[in-house]
Length: 142
Image (cartoon, rainbow, N blue to C red; front, side, top):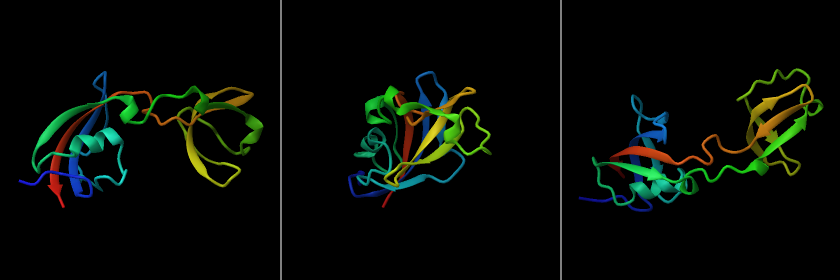
């Protein structure tokens, strides 16, 4: 029976959990996630867990933060004066904002804190610094 290898298109069902058991994402009840192994479409640890699996097989894998969304970086948190935002913005903690840099590149930051003088933005991925556990079922190769 064939095993999944880099370059293969795969379809997987998965459930992702934090160390405390909280489910943060799942394909249960929907279509399987489809992607090409080696194309960097998913986090490195998730992709590595699938390499070598056979169709129909399941596994549970623990992915440390370094192989998931990386460490939480304090330098990715920045307090910005409220006058730098559009006056019609009604900020809420957790709200995502798309930020355009001077070079034209964009990134997403979430509002972490709001005060009268400033809005604190956090550009870390929401799962940065977290170890993750995935239950994975390889549905199809090819």
